[in-house]
Amino acid sequence: MREIKHIAIAAPGRKVIPEQVEYAVKWLHSKGMNAVFDERLFASDYIFAGTAELRAQVIQEYLDRDDIDAIWFARGGYGSIHIIDKIDFSHFVQHPKPLIGISDTTVFHGKVQSLGLTSIHASMPFYLEKKTPESLQSIYDALLGNPLHYEWNAHPCNRQGEAQGVLVGGNLSVLYGMMGSNSFPDTDNRILFLEEIDEYIYHVERMMLGLKRAGKLKNLKALMIGGLTSIHDNPNPFGKTVEQAIFDTVREYDYPVCFNTPAGHIDDNRAMVLGCQTTLSVSNNTTIFNQKIIK
Image (tube, rainbow, N blue to C red):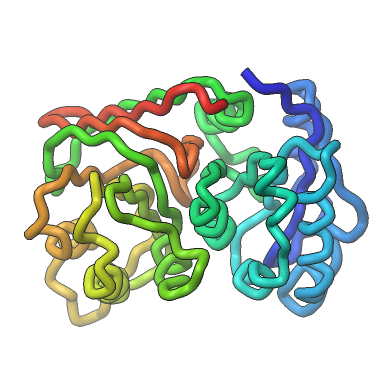
């Protein structure tokens, strides 16, 4: 178990207001941890939390400060892609710390995975009070390096099997926009996790086919699909559910596939450590996910 005392809250993309992080600050305090931020967290530049230069400067500072034990990104949205190439990760590589978030944070997850390190895919301060107790406990467990164990019911589009490998991934749209860059994670012999929100079925399929054509889906150990939240169909129906569209993309492969992973833009968003060895068992009735203690 590692000691986590001081957690910086930073906004790499969309802007936030104080009320949107209050619950998270109180929750950290209840767990014996301190939230670290200043007025720069609430900077505003149109829809963004300040200029790209300011956002990069703040995150660079927190990455380089050895008194900061973790960085928790305040919210999703859009904007991390503006600053990822402005940041020097050399000190972080020598002194890694958990980076925590989902959605737009996928940009940082991919970069951290490309460096051979781990990060935490978990709920963010924004609307944290709406998350389940299990979701909140999982953030705490992941931060401290406790084992993570989840079980959930099977989905008709699952493909059964056992897998072991490093977990990578995040938000599908964000990953799709990162292809070809040095922050896109290596997917060969990995377990790939994907989740999505507010997209059309056809666009989800198009992004999956884009990953496939780029060779990112061929050599997986397994494919895990999390929350598919607020997915839309056209007035003229597409003809498949979003789950069927995803499965058809990887139908020719033989690795396990599971849906309904409790992670993503959902209330019961369980923490998972990306870049960490993971075991997955997809059976007729249940999917079982395990990660051992993170050192």
